Length: 161
Image (cartoon, rainbow, N blue to C red):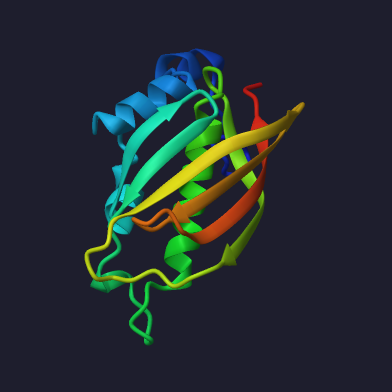
């Protein structure tokens, strides 16, 4: 159904038919590659490696398409990967039909990432929840365990009406 302003209004019975599962189920579908949100993981060449309630881990395979003119991995890659892994940590805590939006994203670059076949690991976790506001943090580490990129995010949970 459309409202008079051109926006589509979702009727309660239609919303129930779509049925967005809880966050842990959504992540399991992604890990099993049975989700329709694979495009970002494909674009960034990351793989959801492991997760549990409140945390997630990605394997990152930055390649030539992620390089900047200095031949390092572009900073946007690190920001996008951290936004993703911290978001997936948050998703693991969501109930059915809940979604979230990132309100604030802060990234610190500590050392350059290389697009030379190195596999990096991104970790994200929920560190605090106050009502609908959630604080997360994340890191991308190199094979020696050195932090390359560190970030925090403030997110807002949106509950169904």
